Amino acid sequence: MLKKGKIKPRTFSNTLPKKLSGELATAKRLNVKPFRAGSPEFNKAINEGEKLKWAVTKEGDLLFIPAIKHQEEIAHSVIAKGQPVLAAGEAQVAGSRGQYFVLDITNHSGHYLPDFNSLELGKAAFKLNDLSNGI
Image (cartoon, rainbow, N blue to C red; front, side, top):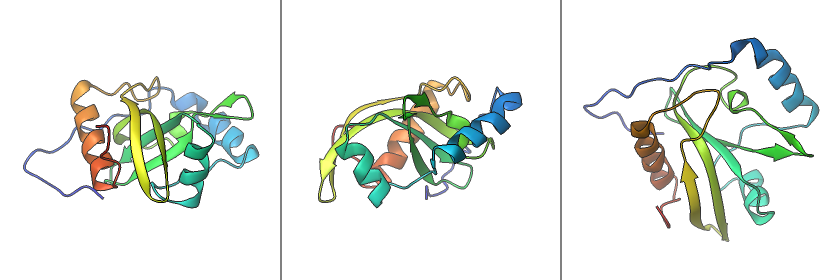
């Protein structure tokens, strides 16, 4: 969880709310649930070389989902169930045994359209979750 500082982060709303029920249904059908850095699901995804979608929730939690599952794209909105987020994007992470290296991190999200400042907040969340190598 991010610690509160002097600057109140902006929130980004889901710009495609009419698609949410279908996106959540797709995630349920494919058994996709958000996971945390270091979890077995996280380790499995990075060991398989999957691109990840990430978001920092309004509560400050950094959560991930696979970008693609069984050749279907999973929407960013699935991470926070359509609720506003502080930051969102995509990442490629490598590692094993609790040692992680961030190969790429972006603020690309067609659902939340985050700004550049949110990427910095995302990078801070990655660092707080022991994902600082490469950032």
